[in-house]
Image 1 (cartoon, one colour):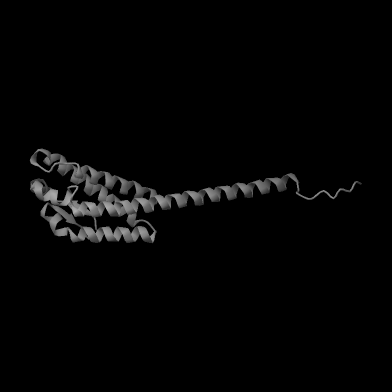
Image 2 (cartoon, rainbow, N blue to C red; image 1 turned 135 degrees about the vertical axis):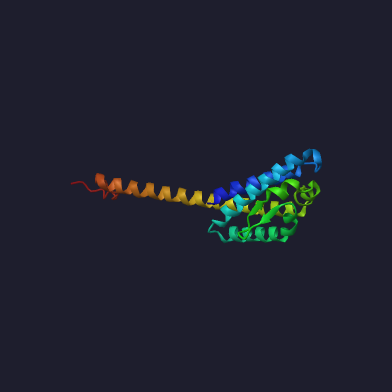
Length: 171
C-alpha cells in the first residue's frame, strides 16, 4: 500500500531529523539511544511496507536502501545493531546499551553520510508513494464517475424516456 509506505517514509525522515538535532555527548546518551531505537523501528516499517509494493520504482529504491545499509553493516554491528538477511535492523541490547556514544555520532548525526543517504532514499520513497496515492485516487474517482454514468443511463431506460429528436410533424 503506497499510502503506508509514504507514512513510513515520512516517519523515518522525522526520526533522522530528530537524531540530527542532538549534541552527541554523555548528557544526551539515553535520548540518543532511544531515538536510534525509534529509527530502527521506522526503518524496518519502511522496508516492509515498500517491499509489499508492486511498483518497480518503489522496489528498486527499497533495494538500494538495503544495499546502502549493508555497506554500513560492520559499523552498525559495533554499536549492537544487526543487519538481518531481509534487510531490516535489530538491536542487540547488551552491546547497544554499552556502546560508546561517539560511535553513534559517526552513524546517526546530521553530518553522517549514512543518515544523509538514508534520508535521500526515504524522500524518494515518500515522493513515489505520494504519486502512486494520487494515481490510485484518480483511478478510483474515474471508476466512481463511470459507475454513476452507467447507473444514470440504466435509470433513464427504465422510465421509458428516450433521447430521440423531434421530427416536427404533428399527428
